[in-house]
Image (tube, rainbow, N blue to C red; front, top):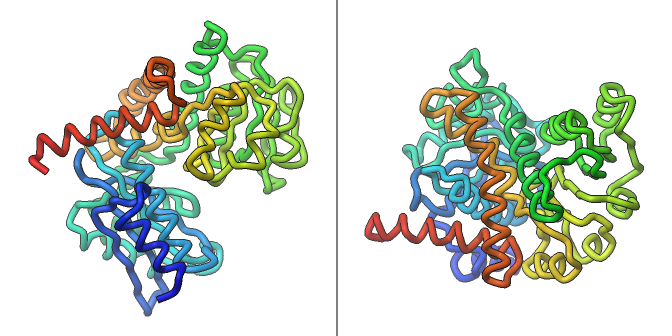
Length: 364
């Protein structure tokens, strides 16, 4: 076994980033499926988390990502007040090249084999139409289309939750939740980011955007000829003068040893998962006086939606739950101040307490 594999196993069984209940390696030779399903915790209920379809460089990288994402879902679901634990799945490969109906059906059979311990949904590289296919083999599938009994695109409420987290950050920093006149930089204006732009422009915020896809940027500029400016790349965005908020809305690791020292923003609040590249970055942000709204708290609107779908979807009910992200974020800032710790650590403590109490009730 290679050193990298040893590292993954050590993460699973020994490190603070591990502690997972179950990891399933899935392979279907006929369709070419290679997937990893990771269940971090079912203390609060069946593990809930999306399916990421991504061309990982190695299988070990895919396993490590599944472990990190599943752990993050435990904390996200706990802070969202859901009766769900955390899980995540990754399918290895370029979805533009290898995604087929046969592959998705094979994946659905693997999820079904877990007997309800894991409920899947969309993530990077998978969409509502994909979940409709997976659901043909697996009843524990959410994020489906309205035509097939689902709630549709969860990015709408994900963006709404991030917007609420941003309002809470403004309340904490300046005593007023309004974002009118604030300058917000958004990295990634795809599934979630473009909805966030809509909320910000509706309130009168000035928005700077960047995205690796020119068509995504073009769509935003066409819809908002005023109040939105495109910049060349993320490196340019984070150094923009007068930035009040930085919103990472693409892949994780956006806050790292290179970007944190360069940030001009007074606060970070975005939709991307796993924004902190490694432990200690949250302290680096605090030391610079930059307020961090924990990613898994503010981006929970989507998981609130897909969890509700399991019980008969009602958009207004979901939106009301997602609106509570404002209060949850403020509570985290208050706990952080009280305990003298960064907000990310405060959120972790609150989530861990809820999971611990649930495990005790189950006699674990």
